[in-house]
Amino acid sequence: MKIQRLTACLVSLIWLLTSASQSVAQQQSIAQTAIAAGNFNTLVAAAKTAGLVGTLSGGQELTVFAPTDDAFAKLPPGTVESLLLPENKDKLAAILTYHVVPGRVTAADAYGLPSAETLNGQRLDLNLRGDFPKINNATLTATDIQCTNGVIHVIDEVLIPADKSIPVTASEAGIFNTLVAAVGAADLGGVLSGKGPFTVFAPTDDAFAKLPAGTVESLLEPSNKQKLINILKYHVVSGRVYGDQAVKARSAHTLLGRSVKIGFSANGISVNDANVISKNIETSNGVVHAIDTVLIPGSSLSPAEAVSMLTSAIHQGVPAFNSGDHSGCCAIYQSTMQTLMDSGIDGADSYATSMISSTLAQAGQSMDDTNRAWALRAGIDNLKSHLSGMQMRQ
Image (cartoon, rainbow, N blue to C red; front, side):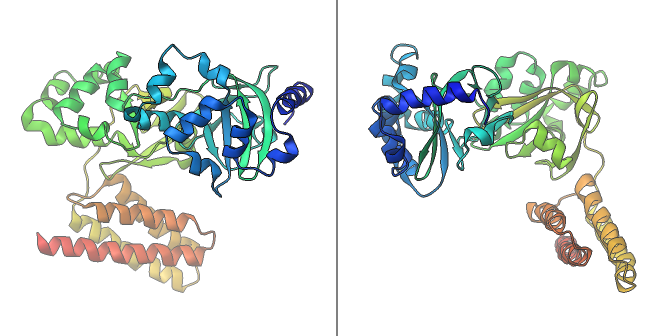
């Protein structure tokens, strides 16, 4: 990486002269290198308390942005002592894993990248192009200290991840009051406070205010609880999905079992007809994207309608495949499965919804039309059989 190469080399040389030599460091693990250096004593003590020494000594290659003892000393008085208490082990582990990126990422590898995902799950912001290369608000003071199981980059600040859950983050933001009230009325607060992670497309108070008069009040009534739950689940995706990842995927499968469409234009990211007005709001158990419109799921299909669609797809796809038009067959099958994912199926269980998404994912991994057609057909046959069984049990 061309991050002020001369400066980085000089700083690295100073660091190496005051610790172990580079040739020795290359024969040691990340943990051993940090111990031998002599200026990572607090980091080493924290790693031991959090039970992470084994991780930093193991066979998995890692990249560590390592705060020095002076970096830890900048924290408010008593912070380090508090983090080293047994009852704060999980919090300490969350902070330390926020400093670790999977794989051996050199300075050259990271140059020009806007971010990096950590073992914590949250992202680090990278800005390595200036005179003072930054990781979040911390400055890199030495780079590319090679170890047997990865690389160390030295930083002058401790990186602190988001430590508040999705509901707490939304409540404290001050612009999601209606959403917070709706989550409470739907008894989903416990779910969204759980481990997750989750991605929430969160309508602002102004977004809810755009709904027809009386809609919010009606949804908050106990008699409409299930309808409210369905609407809220339509805003939640399993996993931590950042804005660029959502745009690349072009759609996201929600907890309702229905997908939303993701787009990108001059106005930014869109979710169905909503615009993302603030993206990548980090929380301890996921990420929040603020949107300007409430997402309302359309009418779903009945199991009978879904079976009819699948049967029709087979009747159209088989002749196309047998005539050699494997691409056309794929288009018929994929369009049908995508429609079922977008529309949803009444009463469909998690097995049915996961079957649709996994079939589409498997088909998307193959560039060969013949293999894609067979993968889609297998998913269609299994889904049709499952839905027919559901109908018989009803």
